[in-house]
Image (cartoon, rainbow, N blue to C red; front, side):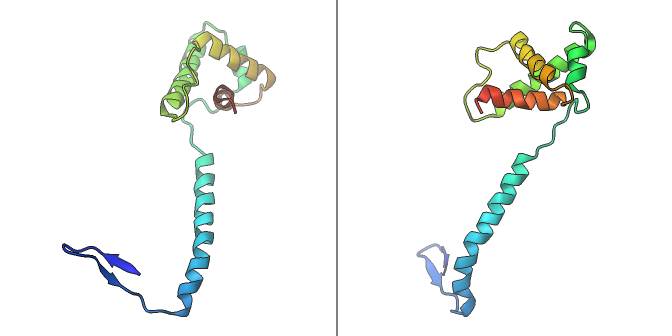
Length: 131
Protein backbone atom coordinates (compact mmCIF):
# COMPACT_ATOMS: atom_id res chain seq x y z
CA UNK A 1 0.00 0.00 0.00
CA UNK A 2 1.36 3.44 -0.95
CA UNK A 3 0.12 6.63 0.67
CA UNK A 4 0.40 9.90 -1.22
CA UNK A 5 -0.19 13.11 0.69
CA UNK A 6 -2.01 15.86 -1.18
CA UNK A 7 -3.25 19.27 -0.08
CA UNK A 8 -6.54 18.00 1.38
CA UNK A 9 -6.52 14.37 2.47
CA UNK A 10 -4.37 11.31 1.91
CA UNK A 11 -5.03 9.23 -1.16
CA UNK A 12 -4.29 5.53 -0.86
CA UNK A 13 -3.21 3.48 -3.88
CA UNK A 14 -3.20 -0.28 -3.55
CA UNK A 15 -0.72 -2.45 -5.36
CA UNK A 16 -2.07 -5.35 -7.32
CA UNK A 17 -1.85 -8.58 -5.30
CA UNK A 18 0.63 -11.13 -6.58
CA UNK A 19 2.58 -14.13 -5.35
CA UNK A 20 5.77 -12.14 -4.78
CA UNK A 21 4.20 -9.75 -2.25
CA UNK A 22 4.12 -12.32 0.53
CA UNK A 23 7.72 -13.38 -0.14
CA UNK A 24 8.91 -9.77 0.08
CA UNK A 25 7.97 -9.63 3.75
CA UNK A 26 10.10 -12.70 4.44
CA UNK A 27 13.07 -11.45 2.41
CA UNK A 28 13.08 -7.95 3.90
CA UNK A 29 14.54 -8.93 7.32
CA UNK A 30 17.30 -10.90 5.58
CA UNK A 31 18.21 -7.95 3.36
CA UNK A 32 18.16 -5.64 6.37
CA UNK A 33 20.43 -7.97 8.38
CA UNK A 34 22.93 -8.20 5.51
CA UNK A 35 22.93 -4.41 5.09
CA UNK A 36 23.46 -3.89 8.81
CA UNK A 37 26.33 -6.38 9.00
CA UNK A 38 27.95 -4.77 5.95
CA UNK A 39 27.65 -1.34 7.55
CA UNK A 40 29.16 -2.69 10.78
CA UNK A 41 32.06 -4.23 8.88
CA UNK A 42 32.67 -0.93 7.11
CA UNK A 43 32.69 0.91 10.46
CA UNK A 44 35.25 -1.53 11.88
CA UNK A 45 37.88 -0.55 9.29
CA UNK A 46 38.84 3.12 9.30
CA UNK A 47 41.66 4.96 7.58
CA UNK A 48 44.30 6.59 9.78
CA UNK A 49 46.41 9.37 8.32
CA UNK A 50 49.60 9.67 10.25
CA UNK A 51 52.75 7.79 11.19
CA UNK A 52 51.51 4.34 10.19
CA UNK A 53 55.06 3.10 9.53
CA UNK A 54 56.41 4.29 12.90
CA UNK A 55 56.77 1.26 15.17
CA UNK A 56 56.48 1.07 18.93
CA UNK A 57 60.11 -0.01 19.02
CA UNK A 58 61.08 3.20 17.27
CA UNK A 59 58.87 5.19 19.70
CA UNK A 60 60.72 3.67 22.66
CA UNK A 61 64.16 4.27 21.11
CA UNK A 62 63.55 7.85 19.95
CA UNK A 63 65.15 10.32 22.38
CA UNK A 64 62.39 11.94 24.46
CA UNK A 65 63.56 15.52 23.86
CA UNK A 66 64.15 15.19 20.11
CA UNK A 67 62.14 17.06 17.50
CA UNK A 68 60.99 13.75 16.00
CA UNK A 69 59.59 12.59 19.34
CA UNK A 70 57.83 15.92 19.96
CA UNK A 71 56.17 15.79 16.53
CA UNK A 72 55.03 12.24 17.12
CA UNK A 73 53.81 13.02 20.64
CA UNK A 74 51.80 15.91 19.17
CA UNK A 75 50.24 13.58 16.64
CA UNK A 76 49.32 11.05 19.35
CA UNK A 77 47.77 13.67 21.64
CA UNK A 78 45.96 15.29 18.71
CA UNK A 79 44.55 11.93 17.65
CA UNK A 80 43.43 11.21 21.22
CA UNK A 81 41.85 14.65 21.56
CA UNK A 82 40.12 14.41 18.18
CA UNK A 83 38.71 10.99 19.00
CA UNK A 84 37.56 12.24 22.39
CA UNK A 85 35.84 15.30 20.87
CA UNK A 86 34.19 13.21 18.15
CA UNK A 87 32.93 10.62 20.60
CA UNK A 88 29.39 10.66 21.91
CA UNK A 89 30.50 8.81 25.04
CA UNK A 90 32.01 10.16 28.23
CA UNK A 91 35.15 12.32 28.21
CA UNK A 92 37.87 9.66 28.40
CA UNK A 93 40.65 12.27 28.69
CA UNK A 94 39.22 14.12 31.67
CA UNK A 95 41.83 14.34 34.44
CA UNK A 96 44.62 13.10 32.13
CA UNK A 97 47.77 14.93 31.07
CA UNK A 98 50.25 14.54 28.22
CA UNK A 99 52.96 12.98 30.38
CA UNK A 100 50.59 10.35 31.76
CA UNK A 101 49.25 9.50 28.32
CA UNK A 102 52.70 9.16 26.80
CA UNK A 103 53.73 6.95 29.74
CA UNK A 104 50.79 4.66 28.88
CA UNK A 105 51.96 4.58 25.25
CA UNK A 106 55.50 3.80 26.52
CA UNK A 107 54.17 0.86 28.53
CA UNK A 108 52.20 -0.53 25.59
CA UNK A 109 55.11 -0.07 23.20
CA UNK A 110 57.56 -1.75 25.58
CA UNK A 111 55.35 -4.85 25.51
CA UNK A 112 54.60 -4.64 21.76
CA UNK A 113 57.65 -3.21 19.96
CA UNK A 114 56.57 -4.49 16.54
CA UNK A 115 53.16 -2.79 16.62
CA UNK A 116 52.65 0.55 14.88
CA UNK A 117 52.30 3.66 17.03
CA UNK A 118 48.83 4.10 15.50
CA UNK A 119 47.85 0.70 16.93
CA UNK A 120 49.25 1.68 20.33
CA UNK A 121 47.18 4.87 20.23
CA UNK A 122 44.04 2.97 19.29
CA UNK A 123 44.61 0.44 22.10
CA UNK A 124 45.08 3.33 24.52
CA UNK A 125 41.72 4.75 23.46
CA UNK A 126 40.04 1.41 24.11
CA UNK A 127 41.73 1.20 27.53
CA UNK A 128 40.72 4.74 28.47
CA UNK A 129 37.15 4.05 27.40
CA UNK A 130 37.16 0.99 29.65
CA UNK A 131 36.75 -1.64 26.94
